[in-house]
Length: 278
Image (cartoon, rainbow, N blue to C red):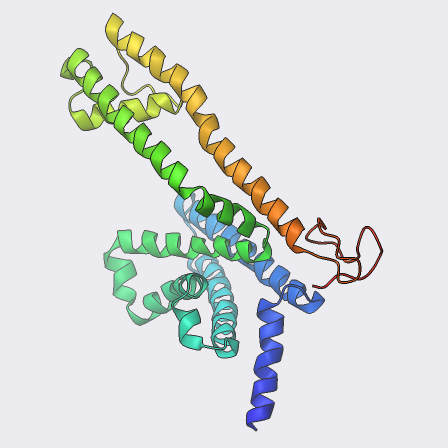
């Protein structure tokens, strides 16, 4: 019996976690598309439920669909916990927390319906938590790990860059607070720093605008700075992504001719034609 159970767990693990197999990719694609369907359903429910007065039967259709979606994701969650070598590690992992958080809202509402009736904010929060199901789609994108590793490797440069930007925003915000003053909308230092951030990001909402010549000069400097600052983190992440891709190519070595530099999805050596290891 234990051997049979172990075999079932191993098969489940390959289906749910091993994207190198065809069946594993199909299962990942199914849950990714199902997550997209559930998120679209939430947006439709939110839009129709807010703009139109639905009947009790029409609301019931959304409720039954949500119950079905939640049951499918609940089954997925328990199967993933069951087949993971150390179930407790998966429960407290990033994906485990996301999987649990996206199925909890329905159970919370069922167990304590007065929360959704008496506290409208709690109802909106439950709806927002359900939207986190969109993160399940990331499981179907293993290449995103390259992007994540690039961010991690560039984290020191990014921290220094954003710390410098934060210091500059405080300085420029303080200057505008002193130059413009409350009569032109710069009522507090917080509002002035908010204006500096909006301006340097070239968004420009227009809710606070400078009126003096000195204030407009500072705004012009910030706008010109914004165009150059956008390129810096992009260049940092791009260079680290290129380095990570090159490292992956170099790490794939042909067992026959020992040639390196193969693509991550290559199956055969580009020099001798021999089969590459997975």
